[in-house]
Amino acid sequence: MAERTRFGPAGVPPMFRLMGADLPDVPRLLREEGLDALEYEAVRWGPKPQITKEHAEELGASAKENDVRLSLHGSYYINLSGKREVVEASKRRLIASATAADWMGAYVMVFHTGFYGRFEKDFAFKTCLDALKEVSAEIRSRGLRVKLGPETMGRKFQVGSLEEIMTLCQEVEGTQLVIDWAHLYALHQGSLKKTEDFRAIAEKVESRLGSEAMRSMHCHFSKIEFTLQGEKRHHTLDEIRYGPDFRMLAEVIADFQMHPTMICESPILDVDARKMKETLRQVLESKQSKV
Ligand SMILES: [Zn+2]
Image (cartoon, rainbow, N blue to C red):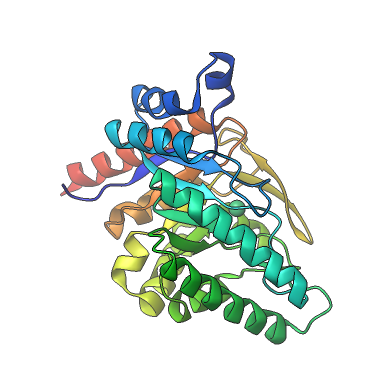
């Protein structure tokens, strides 16, 4: 079957919890809403998986049955650019997340690489690159199939500009490009104002990593509020005073025949994921009628 753009929430939608849904019920509920992706949030995890293997496998089986693509968001407590002991602890957390991701059959483990801290930018980045290579080797030696997904970040003190993330994807084996469009928007103080701005990013990715990496990127999307330091708060798609505008990205998805996995990080997760799916449908339809 041809690849397609998939949509889903970052975490279990609050309404599902109110309904008393258990984790393995979530993929079915998403499918009933017309969604086909889910990012499992392991963002508060320490050095051990905080889900049992059995439970993770149940989620994985249910996702497969309902054609929901799983990804996993690893721990926020990661700094691959810090002091030696911090980097070692971060690596253990990444391995724990990757282990659980493998249990549930998640295709990518998304994570935030770290902070510059007191270090020179170049030195901090090199530390991060070396640590990530070690994590990649360890994951492969354990036979874990999940890809490592370093994410573009939204604050100036964080490692994770688009350039840095593309370099990590180029240099480290078993990686998957993760673009958080809201973070890019916030980091660059509201860039991405026109469809051409989105197009330029897709072209940059294509020239560095190739067409398939560009077409199959893993994405986070929501509207966002920012300060001079970057990201402040995620917002819903209907709040007109905030950006970026998903329709512009949908134009680029259509023009470049992309098939990204779009994870919605707005405060109303699944509701806005459905809105994005509908927007892409409209864009594709209007382009087809022009042919
Ligand atoms: Zn993230």
